[in-house]
Image (cartoon, rainbow, N blue to C red; front, top):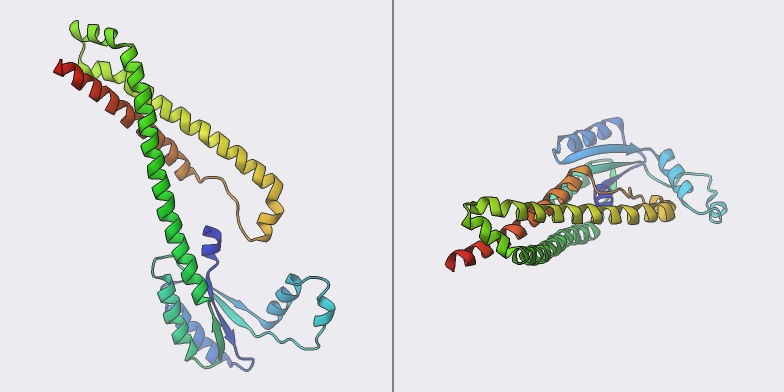
Length: 250
């Protein structure tokens, strides 16, 4: 989806008889817009060659024309932000009034739906992540609690001979962190295996869709491992705090 999102662009089709001065004015209007990330000029010859390369061999004999029907154009890419559709719409209105512009295309309805879908996807994934984190906290917390109760006599003896609550907590906190680390590493290995299988089986289809099928980026990779360790630490802290609180009440 990120690859598709980066491909959102505004296409400005030019009149065949556009003059150099009109092109210069047009390029000036585009370059002044701070939201524009890239501008690519596509000549009539390049557009026709790209069109012919993208159609099937069976249709090529039907398109053996003696003239080039496609206009030259500018492909304008924009920086990704929350108001991108607004900036695209505003720039398109400005360019429509310029001389030498035949038409403008940017798929307003498609972009609007796609950006809404991106926002929904992010909210959905964050919600699923939150539920999974809560589930992991409960699972690890119960596991640590069972481990604590199996060593209850040893813990009470340690406290009687002068051990501090902190020294009692540390081994269980480390156990929870190790469980979180082991779970994240195992999960990443499984995801890596699925990623390698899909890439080896469907690489040609992925390339034809214009996508770059990558594994989790390093910042997110380390972030997931760190978050898993933090979840394990939180879960074990909850269990040890609850146990020592009940023990002090006795």
